[in-house]
Amino acid sequence: MTKRDFHLNPPPKTILIISMRYLGDLLLTTPLIRTLKKAYPNVEVDVLTYGNTIGMLEGNTDIRTVISSPIRPKFGDYKRIIKTLFRSYDLVVSTQTGDRQFVYSLLASARRVSFVPPRSEKGWWKRYFFQGWAEFNNLDNHTVLEFLKLPALLGLTPHYELIPPITPSLGLLEDLNIIGDYAVLHVYPQWTYKQWHKQGWIDVAHYLTQYGLKIILSGGPDKKEQDYITDIQQALPKDTLNLAGKVSLAELNEIISQAKLFIGPDTGITHLAAASNIPVLTLFGPTNPIKWGPWPKHYRRSTNPYTLKGNQQVNNIYLIQGSGDCVPCDLEGCDRDRLSRSMCLDTLSSMTVIKYIDQAFETIK
Image (tube, rainbow, N blue to C red):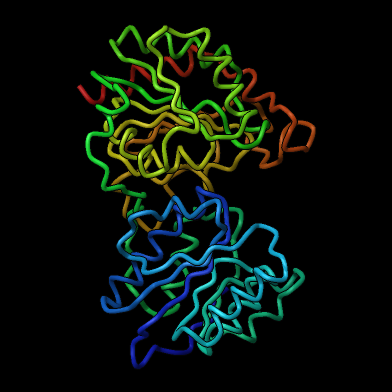
């Protein structure tokens, strides 16, 4: 359900996007931002997001300023943010229904477009404070298409491309001693229930070397993540390059974009890889692929790229789904906890992934 009862006249000179989400979610917001920028070429767009995700917007020319917030703001943080936002914008577009985002919207502009909870849920009344609103669908609409509902309230033509972070650095690959063809493996998602088994990653990495590829492991700076990646690295060829915590998101995007192949789980870096024009294999377990499958390169349709069940290819994406009648359950692991394992991923065989590696390379010959 949506409401659209106004046109922006005159066109806005300043817009605030509120997207206080994880890395992948923030990247999936960039088609919304591009849509607004294309419709209003002279508009200045700012984004309010969490400080630990702003790297995903580095070098994005659609954006003037990124306003950062801690995940758990203190009084001083609220004071700074409110002072920055207060009546500073001609329009606010909020991608979330939460109370904090709702208050920021009220303070930042007299004209507001937002998602709101359905009438059956708490907070349904927030719709009365927005000139344009859409009920948030968290089940059977891809996140990119869901976000694009908001500019549709303004009658704008959608633009579907993801805008990855970019860096002006030159000679990055040479500086990191990356020579020849390579594949990037991102083996560690943020939550345990999205993890594939270590032996699978080891088997796949060794198989990729038969294609003459060097293996690059990507990851973040967290010690637990780095220990996990180092453990896998020890079972791989000696020339394997571990970049965990050593490059920015924009630099990682440059590295991935020149790879022959990327393989990763349901995580933000896999969404980043999907924006490059290379084959991307992604391993899905409990997560709903209709909602969260990586957005395929050159996919410009208003219909969902993926179906709910089964292995599937859409453009450069090979989505490999764990098996089981319960898949996808859309729950956080078999024990309903983010730190629990998922049987559908634990039983996903290396040979299944290897089959799709061969298919990907056959496609790009």
